[in-house]
Length: 128
Image (cartoon, rainbow, N blue to C red):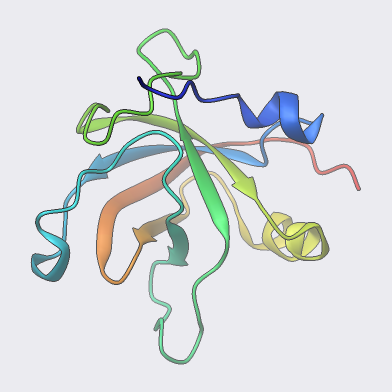
């Protein structure tokens, strides 16, 4: 039986940090992956090198066409293109990312290779 995804907003008791439009485009080395709700991919800013600049623990939460959080966690059961809430996991890094993230910022979801290309479409107000 599928485990239902509990929205991060309920868990964290705050709003997501920003929202992206994404397009799944798996790198060859992870071509058999099945991205799904609850995946723990990292965020890589466009132009950064994962070896020197590192990747960031900013997790996506996939939204349906109505902007609601998808609850189904079945691997591979998300649209190839869509929108996702983004959550900076490390509270101590939220201010850093809010200073760097702007509408139009491009990035990549990363997990041993590229999972998706993303573009920031909304930045929510930072509250510490």
